Image 1 (cartoon, chains in turn orange, blue):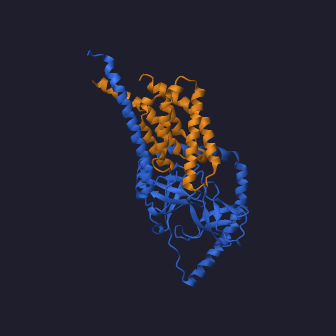
Image 2 (cartoon, rainbow over the protein chains, first blue to last red):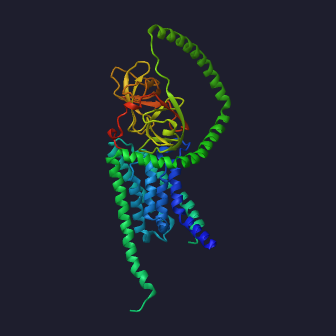
Image 3 (tube, rainbow over the protein chains, first blue to last red):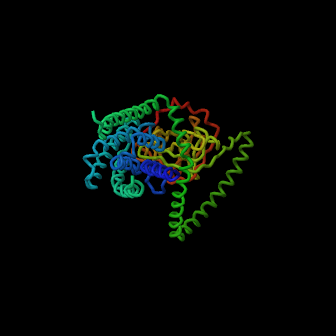
Length: 171
Length: 291
């Protein structure tokens, strides 16, 4: 009886790993880091995690979780409430619908797919910013953010692979 | 009809898929609705936003501490390297400052006498709250901070945020334990300023770059590099005389100001209540939030 309960708690904890890691990345994205100019070109970490889990473990990253993560990102980033939630949901839906295309392919395919996703979201982000702010937004930081995010994707993916192997291997 | 074990699965799969699609649609609508409601009812959105930030304030506070420690260690190591140079520089500066101190003492005495002669009422000393910066939510589109002090600590909307050197920004959202600071570099930030020497008034207007622009400067004002800019107190949001920055770039009609506050490495800031919060327009009259 106790063992069964323990097992259930254990399983629940493991199932939460994708959600928890993504929330951690949202928090990490919000922390002031001592690097000069880092804040303007901060890599879009939560999007990487949403992309990764939607691709490799969609069962543990349901749309509702993506929604919550998006709202959290909105709160921390100062974006209009619902903006990132919508963005993440679109990415999540897109990746899930194209899973068959990507599953089992090499990492470079996945990376390229992420690049496409990131370019699209970056463009949406930039365009909506120019619309709301009235066309006065400089494109350089957005471009730098895009490149940095793309460059860091393999690193984060490596970490997430470890997380997946540690917590989700037996599920 | 004979029961087959695969049947239930075959029947439930399309139902499940449909339900999943429904959930997607519902969440899409919820997110879109949130954006619309956020635009229509700024007050509600802001309250919700600061409530969530409030709930996460302890977490952010805890996690940002190691980051600050690492930063301190890096700075320590760097300082150790150029200790000798720093010493020379400080000795020179000390000498210069002593001269200034002399001058300041003389002026203080002089101004005290003049004040007494004029029956001048000095402005009230501001109430100051110091707060730790727990989240830097600045991006290419927004320049703002979260600090670990809120209504419970006496923080109010409209207060001026300053660090040791100069103006940082102002408080725009206040929760119980956290408050959001809009930096002077944000694209929505407008600060009425004057040039310290010539007293020409202008508006310091952020554009999300590191150096905000000085706009509406009169033609006869001839800003030179290094001219100091301070708040003018017009508009009533900031009191007059808070140092803001120095002119760092003049070309054609464009004048840019380097803020004195170290905006990219703020650890603690002071929130000063000059009793001017009441003049801030109500939330709904402000421009909508930005992405």
